[in-house]
Length: 301
Image 1 (tube, rainbow, N blue to C red):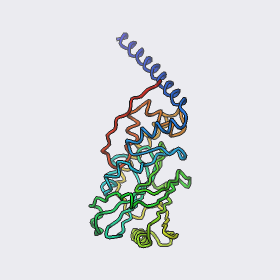
Image 2: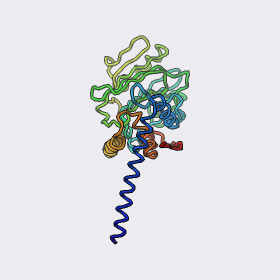
Image 3: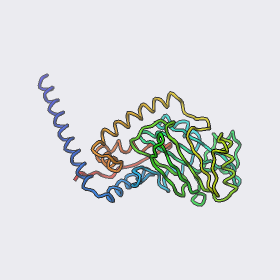
C-alpha cells in the first residue's frame, strides 16, 4: 500500500518536473523567433481554419478565400450557435436588388473564448417572400459582388479593433477576451456600387426597425451603429447563460495557461506547442462545424 502510494507521488513529481522543463523549452523557442517568423508560423497554422493574424491589432480575422465561403448562410446557423458556445447579437438586413433577395448580416458577441464581430454579404437565387427568409440557404457573394466595408467594435466605449476592406465577410476576433453581447457596440459602414442598391439597403434597415435619423448616407456609403439589435434574436436565454459560463471559464483557463506571454501572437504559438488539441479547439468558433485539420509536427529545439 505504502509502496504504491510512494510510486504515485514519485511519478507525479517526475511528471511535474518534465512538464516544467517542456514549458521552459517552448518559451525559449518562441522568444528566439523574430516577429516576422512568428507571424508567418502562426498564419500557416491558422490558414486551414480560414483565418489569419493581424499584427497591427493583435487579433484574428477571416481570410478572403476562407473555406467557410462555400457554405453560405441560413438562419439555422444562428439558431443553433449557442449550442456551440457562440453567444452573439445578430442583425440580418434583407433587401431586394437586381432580381434577387440580398442579405447583409451583422454579428457581435462571444465566440468561445473570442470576442468578435462580423459582417457577411449573401444573396438568394431569386426574389423571396419574407416567410421564406428563415428557410432559404443564401449564397456568399462572388468576387465581383463584394463591397467595401468597415467596422469598429467597441467594448463599453473602448475600441477593441477596427477592420476594413473589400470583402464578402469582414471579421475580427479578440482572443481571450470575454464579454456579454450587450456590452459591445459596432459602428459599421458599407459602400455600394450604385444609388439603387444603397436605397434598397437603407429601406431594409428601416424595415428592420432602424430610425431614418440614425442612418447616415454620404455619397454611396451607408453608416450606422449596431448596439441593441432591432430584429428578434434566435438564442435561448438558458442555453446562452450556460454557454457564457463555459466561455468565461475557458477564457480564464486560456489566460492562465498562456500567462508567460502577453500578446495574442505569442499566446497562440505557446498554446499550439504546449497543447495542440486546445489550439485546434479554440479556432473552431465559426458556425459551420465541418472542420478537418492535421497539425504539423512540433519541435521544441
